[in-house]
Image (cartoon, rainbow, N blue to C red; front, side, top):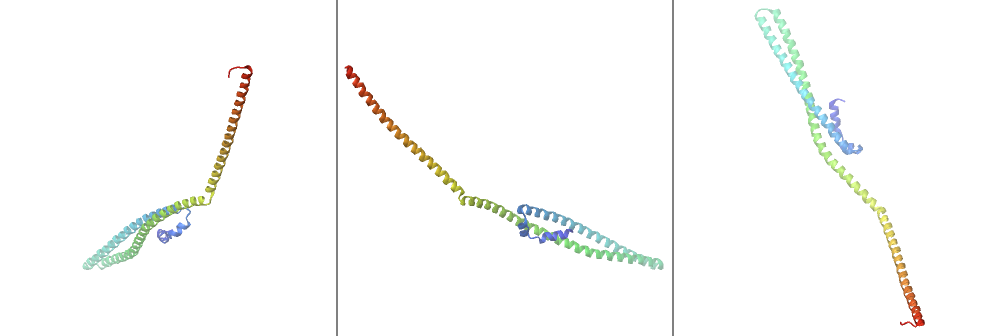
Length: 222
């Protein structure tokens, strides 16, 4: 594709449409800016070449104009010397030089139009690049903010769906159940301990009675 056609394509590109179609908008925007910078550099180079060619055409036109003037003076000199044949040859050379100067003048007009076209393309692309850089900077910021918001929304949705709360409820129920079991076990252990103590007291009392009976039987001092 010719350079100007590529530039026109970039100038007509709809940034929003490109972003909508891109899988990675940020990567696409960076690539677009890189493409525009490369095209801008190429257009700038072509403008410099076109201007150089215009100067070359100007020099060639001036050379032929000077040549035409020089041959015309020689024709005048030949006539002054009554050398008509030589004068005709000089005039012929002068006409040829004039024709060449006219051709270069036409080429200069065409080249001037090309220079203006390239310059306009360069200025438009330069302006579009600055605008696109600003747009991309804003869109990249918005894209990153949207991603962050999306992650936050996903986290909120995950919490809102009750899964985490249900897990907490199950854990709470399990803990309460364990506490109840522990309380019941402690209660049972407490009862057993009281019964054991009374049983021990009764046994000790029975042993005291038996011991007293033995002492009485043996008439031992109490």
